[in-house]
Length: 348
Ligand code: NCD
Ligand code: ZN
Image (cartoon, helix red, strand yellow):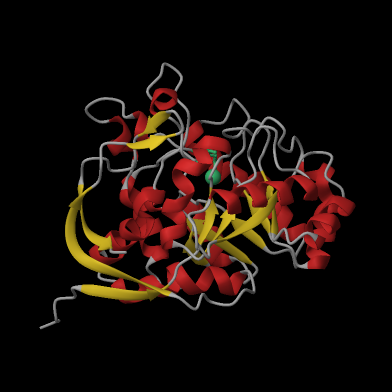
């Protein structure tokens, strides 16, 4: 009989897709990630976006000064691509320790109005990134109004991603927060420079959780939650497969309670309060706890050619109830799975 596991120690994980906002909102929540993660890829969709090296440097300084004292958390900065981003912008970003560039199709999600309207306009910039080995991070959804919101990721693969991979065979690409079987299959069929992040909420929830028994704004995010079968099941299989192309990226995206509970609620699910515990819950349910460390702490770093963290974290098997809300700037935020019980807990 398998011994009952009561604690697990992991190399400190990294979050390869995270929103921390700025100002008072940043100060409210960044410590939660810093307590669990060694590094995080910081999304640049501020308003205005982080679209040059100077802004990226200033944003990094703001994050560092918002961290708890003695924190060793390392925010990894990302450039926001617009129609006007040039190879020179990429070079300057690289010279200022920016590690990747993010493509938001214009209008795809929160603060993406300055995103790219037509990817072919960026081909000289992508060619330069390919030459430098700088990863392209993709919000993989088309935004045409004739495409159903549940189909936007699959159409993006057919119409855009396949072409980009064909035209830039050496470009490193992270297909961010994948949500569909089509995305899993595409990544599996691609060469080793194509990887994907998977969020805890797309592993733990499907569109029924958002819509059955009343509309639940705290389950609304982009890309939107999909069906259990075949999509959520495909993500569970991919995350726990041990394949190094799939790694941790929470897409924790905080919005104040009032901005979510509204006639036009914002997209974004907040998971930073217990990200690693959520993933541990997933991996335990799949009988794959022994594969959590690779997914959370190794595969992402390997893809970015960064060393593994030297610290560790320990999770204990212990029931605790997720709070109904946390303070967030001068408001509150409702976390993912608020008031539900989790059975793993990182103890300080
Ligand atoms: C993100 C946000 O709020 O910044 N929202 C979300 O639903 N994931 C933006 C994004 O990553 O799409
Ligand atoms: Zn995001």
